[in-house]
Length: 361
Ligand code: ZN
Ligand code: ZN
Image 1 (cartoon, rainbow, N blue to C red):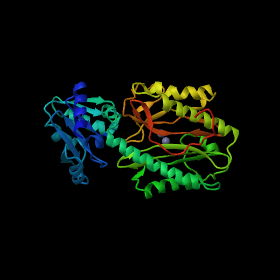
Image 2: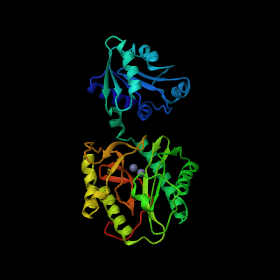
Image 3: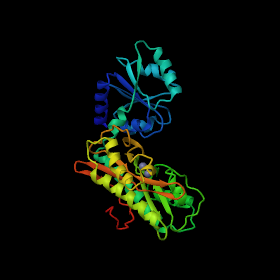
Image 4: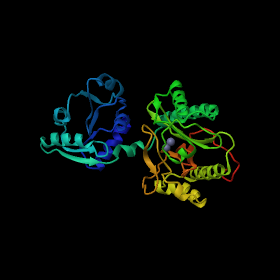
């Protein structure tokens, strides 16, 4: 944690800030180790304070030994001035992407009473640090990936026509929880037949049928870290459309995985997969980004997509998840989590893909 605080302080200096108020939950946990669901960090060049309420003070002292834990009560105008009065200087950053407008108004009201205090909105200061993982973080993500893989293998091999999407989703969630997962990292997606043309379909009472695509998208959370896995399966014999679309998506997925390199932008990485799908004539049917960072949050930096200037750094962990969605028929999406090393992307995901023996491999 101390190296994280150091990195943040270097960022503060770069941004000419004297201190920063951290409110974003994953950033709070990343910097302090405190896993509770409420509280603020106030970090300056010589202070690191964790302000939280009665419910969490004991937990915070245990989990965040590098921080001075201060118990707070009530609204921002009540506890912020006494806390901030110890700051020598007063250019205070806050997280513009997180602080809700109503809370910002209260902070601004409190700050206006304090001489020389100036609030400065910051964007993605801590998110940029979080985009590069250390060995322990990669270990935790790999464990969460392994758990989602196991849930998929177990449930997919038992899935039969006549089950509902909801049943399959619950079986996946139950597997994760019964095998040590703290939670699912997002609501499980099971989308069958035409429903699979909707990238984020909510599991319904629709019955699974043979010969249709079934998109299954799930993730586990373990020791705070998330995984994210998508597989598309077919119960019974897949038809020609399924084979063609699946081979295209798999080709895009494997091509991107084999050619992504550190130093590329998120947009350049996105192109690597997208071009394969465009060449197969499905360009308009791939309407979302190629991937996203995974860590304490299931969606975080870097973003691999159109217009993303995020630089893919060594030890970034992100998904590669192309998809093709044909309205009325269905869709295919394949998603792995990879860690970017100096030789390229290494997949953490082991869950089976379908091998039609096409040119994709
Ligand atoms: Zn996913
Ligand atoms: Zn994803």
